[in-house]
Length: 278
Image (cartoon, rainbow, N blue to C red; front, side, top):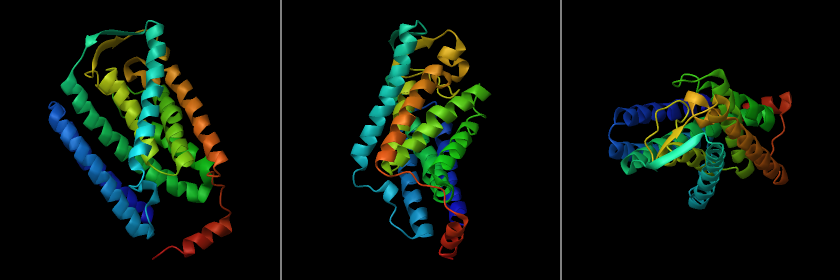
């Protein structure tokens, strides 16, 4: 039941916040305000429901050290997408025509913050964390990465390749970031940094969504395997490559820190289930 309650709580705040933010997308300042409010409420709801259902300190969202962890994660996300754009620019697939919209950048800041926080709380905070307890790190990483990719299939201009790319470069990489650090602040930062760089700074399409109103006035064109086509650079082979490299790096760090969880034997699972609070 803890899984059910946690999913319901996070999905509820995601749905309410997401609908509210989408309803005011034409007003960037309201989008910034509602997006920021959604991020705060989502964190508070997660801490409350996990603390109540698992009766433990919610260490994965400990406020102590949150700011530097978010900062490190955001920097990683910004650099990672910057490397994708650098490759697109040097190959002639990305052009900058001037400055874009400061208000659009502000609106995308709120929109991307809300998306990063709610998605990380659901996919890494609830699903990955609990699946890992029973099936171990490797199986949990593969299963939740695939689920994360499938969740992007309903997006505009989504393709099977785009969903698969998201599974590898984001689903697997963000789970690996959680395993390496054992907190949600770093993957939230990486997720936000990546998405905000894509839409808020470089004005490219993000997962098929219309986010081309950021800081730079730009166009992306060329081979869809290189640019990601209408789905955006997240469908680019460059994104997959850098995502795989970062995943390997995070998993290496997790291994060094002893953070990889083996699969439980059946008897251990039964014993753990028997000890759960009723």
